[in-house]
Image 1: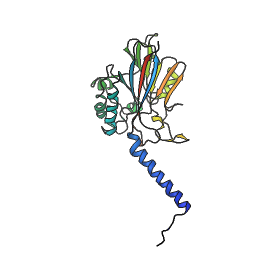
Image 2: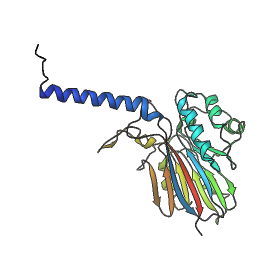
Image 3: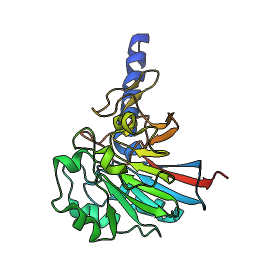
Image 4: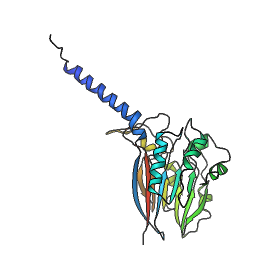
Length: 267
C-alpha cells in the first residue's frame, strides 16, 4: 500500500498551522501566568538602601494561580515597600478580591496605591477607607514622607482621572528625594524635572508584541512609552509591563512582570 505524500504547499500550510497552535497555547495558557521577576539598581541621594516592589495593572478578577504566585514572589523578596501604580482591579473583577490579594503584603514601609483608569471608571467609593481597611496607603494628588529625606508622591491617572501636579508636589521639601507614582506614563512630560524617579504602568508592555513589528496596540495614555527605563530632564521613569491582562486574557512575547527597584545611596 502506497502512503500518500504531501505536496510542498501542503507541508508549508501544515507547518504554519502547527506554529499557530503553539502560539495560541503560549498566548492563552503559558505567558499570562509566567511572571518574570526583574531587578534594577538605582542610585539616589538616600541615607540608606531600600527595595521597592513595583506592581502595576494587576487586573485582579479572582484569586487564582497567578495571584497566588504574585504573593509568593513578592513576599519571598521581602521588599521594604510595595507600590501599586493603578488598575489593581480590572474589568470584571471584584474590589474584595483585590483586598484579599493586597492585604497579604506586609513590608515595613507599607503598601502604597494610586488610581488607574479602571479605578476611575469603576470607583470603589470611599477609596481611602477601603485601602486603609487592610493597612494600605492611598495617594490622590498628594505626597507623604517615606523615610528620611525620601518622599513619595501619588498622582491621579492622566487618561481617565484628574492629576494635579502642583497640588501633589506642594508639600514636598525642595531638598527631598522625590519618588512619583502614577498610572499612565504620558503624564511623565508634566513631571520630568520635578522629581527624581517615576514608577508607572498602563501599557502592559504592549501585551501582544509581534517579532520584528512590536505591539499590536497600546492604550491611550501610553504616549511614546512602552516598557522599561526612560530618562529625561534628570528624571528616570520605569514603565512596568504589569501583571494582569486587559480586554483579552492573552499575552504574547510580553511576559507579566514584577519589578524590584533596589535603591542604593549615591554617595
